[in-house]
Amino acid sequence: MREVTVAHLGVDRTNNSPVVILREKDGSRVLPIWIGPAEASAIAMELQGVKAARPMTHDLLKQVIGGLGGTLRRVVISAVKENTYFAELMILRGEDAFQVDARPSDSIAIALRCGAPIFTSDDLLGDSGVESDLPSPDPSAEAERLRQYLEKLDPQDFGKFTP
Figure (cartoon, rainbow, N blue to C red):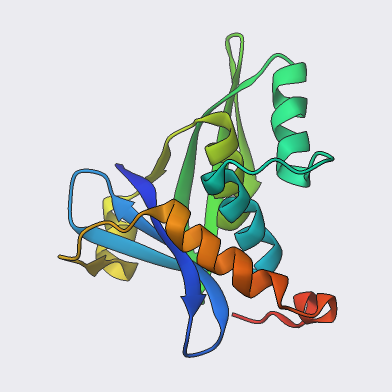
């Protein structure tokens, strides 16, 4: 397993889809994952430290996990099948550990809120990752650009996302 961090959050200009770039913490490989606009907004808000007036779904899930006595220990981006990525939330409650299937975009948004590390496998980085020698950009600056893009979207566009 390799720990990754959110290195970049932006819009893929070829198809105008939001994309989150995860960078290997102690390496040079990056893993791009195309995500929906709502999840991109949730990630961007957390990267910028913006709090909504009312709890968003990811904030709510953080509260539910904590309210039930659990902690999010880590997120694992586990696989990609037919261009669909899979992830698991690893939740610890007392002596019990739970693994919850989730979308990577939701998992990343929750991990950022909970301060939990994000991991992926060497195989996934090897198969779907890309070598990068570019310095890590400031994710909060990229999040601001994405926020501006998302503000211009028509709400009806949210249902039209296809990766």
